[in-house]
Amino acid sequence: MLMKQALAEELVDPARHVSSPEQKTILPGEIAGVDTSLLWIPSGGEADITSPAERQHICFLVGGAGRIQRPGAEHGLIAKDLFAGLPGEPVKFVADAATTLLLIAMDLHPCETANPKTEIYPVVRRYEQCEKYRDYFKTPKTVSRTLVHPFTLPRFSMGSVETTGPDRIEPHAHPMLDQHFFSFADNRCTLLVDGERHPFGGNRLLHVPLGSEHGIDAAPGDVVNYLWIDFFEKSEDMEYLVQVHKPVAE
Image 1: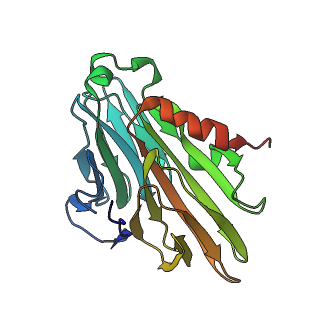
Image 2 (image 1 turned 90 degrees about the vertical axis):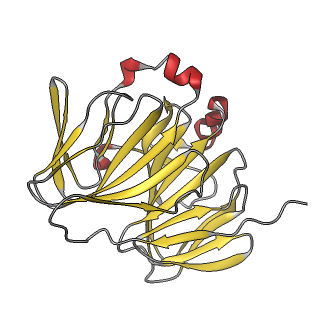
């Protein structure tokens, strides 16, 4: 019999002040082949965020502003923007203001490194312009966005959830993927995992147990504001998100 996996959680400090770039791994070793970290860069500082050819890096600005510099191009980013570059291509972040980056690094399969989909890079997303969607376990009140659509990057998808209480995300399970939640500072609600209630505050990275039934209970006055970050073992399993997430016409 498999032992029930516990909910893993780590409190982070996205507003940390630094005089030179500093990086901290959060929830190390929680998901095989995945490293998640925070990178703090002072105003005027810069950091090399190049990914090796065998890994995919996804960079999300928790706060601040700056520029991604890559060969022959520059991309300005502000808080809540996302960038993913071609693995192996040199990438540098130059901070125009004190900046905190959420960096996600995942191992690629040999077939993915041998045949990269170079035409999709770079992936740059403006948060407010990301497509909204509905799914069957959320109410119409909930605002959900897709930052990285399934089948864009190898075996990876990412989005966000926003609402205020009273509201509820009904417990549901998806055993084909591993999932992190990253909560913004104002997030205050209750996470439901396998029938248990857990306070879900701001500035946290959670690893939702693989295959668990999980949802959100938002009481009056609560705020729900977090990223979901999905890691798949098989590319074809991303079809689950295509079927469940239904785009909202604006």
